[in-house]
Image: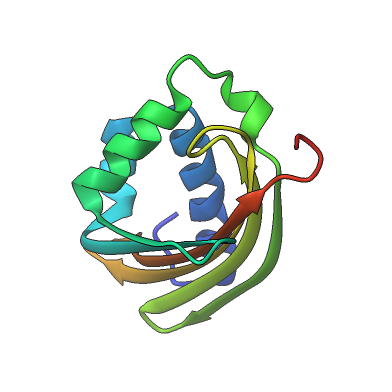
Length: 132
């Protein structure tokens, strides 16, 4: 979808999850803006900040040899659109950094070049209580 609506942004989030869990770097490259910054704050207070290529490499490694359908759990709390800007607040359970993690993601999107792109992610991650 190439519209500036909450429905189109919600569909882009579904694409983001599908391409991320299948490590589809070609499609992720289209969704992640060139200037994306990803900040992850862990439960122990450690902050990791990554740029696009570092983040994509981490995802590729995290989801290699994984079954994508096993990692599609999500709870979307909020989707908002204001012109060319969008925001999604979502919870995910994914195997990043080892065991399954419960991650709260605050994702900022920009509508540029005829599509929604992630410009910033701010995440809070902790071990998933169900798998710990």
